[in-house]
Length: 221
Image (cartoon, rainbow, N blue to C red; front, top):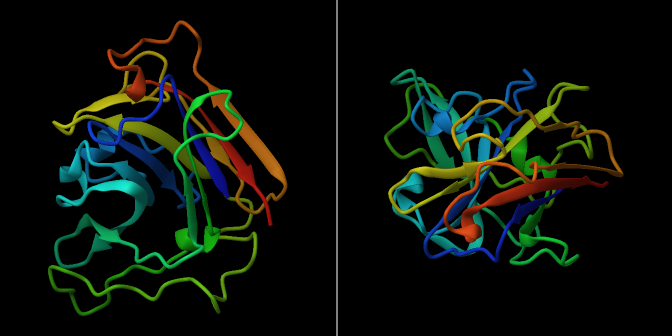
């Protein structure tokens, strides 16, 4: 799957972080920006690029390549936590521009099996830092093109975050934390593409490098 994160100007990975958030639970609920402050409700995974808000991921910066985090339920506390997925070569391809040139932004192409992982914690209750789960690289038994519940949708949101951790923009046309939009794709439907562009009169942001124009997803075998 390839996701294009489309912005109004070239990205600024020093002052902003760019998040691609996916809900792969199959409940067709959109992951919204409030998830950063509300126990990651309807967040399953997120890719993060940039160092603008390293507090989101415990101080780590991803200015050269994106990182991937899984949201998991901690049985010891009953609350969700974030777990960094260990990536191996060829699982994620990052291009810091969109080759078509129609929009600024960046694109990532990734193995869909990366979003089909078991919880990184086991019973009994885990320690504060869970051990890395096996990487779904070569030899994975993840079925090609079929992930989770057959026919279920993956809901996807885009966010830009500033150095204070505040959400600057989203796919909403009326405000970065508003919940007036939905965007979903069917992961087992191959050779398809889907786009969503924000209306031209959408609420603007001060820095065009953090202004989200839209999203395009390509799904291939």
